[in-house]
Amino acid sequence: MNITQPSFEVPADMRDFAEKSVEQARTALIALMQNARRATESLQAQTKTIELPASVAYVHGLELFEQNLAAAFEVAQKLVRASSLQDALQIQSEYVHAQFATLQSQTRELASAAQPAEAA
Image (cartoon, rainbow, N blue to C red; front, side, top):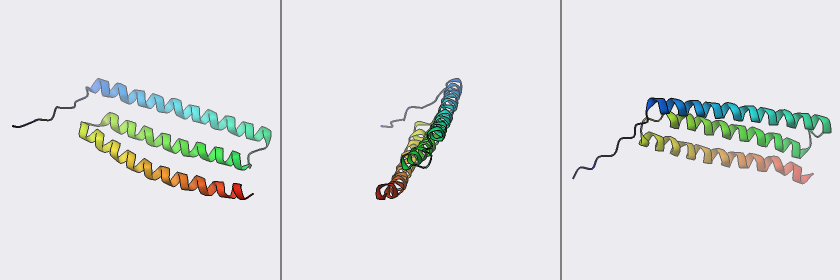
């Protein structure tokens, strides 16, 4: 008995719509992050807290969030362009592995950044 795998084909117009939607979401979130950064910088300048450990940690956290957000949008763009279910699963698997390693690295980085603050 020969079992064939069903075809996974996304119509071109649906793929284009999804790609545009991902790009619009990326643009909106980048604008949101820029506004959050400007608001943070303005607040820090007004309150003169720019060098306090909590402020430094917050800004660093925003940077890490931006990196993770960029990675998520990159994988979303790849998924939109996937030509088969197998490709989509491979893209997702690679993303999960890479993001797990990134999160481990970021955790170590944040932990080492917090140590001087605890010692003070």
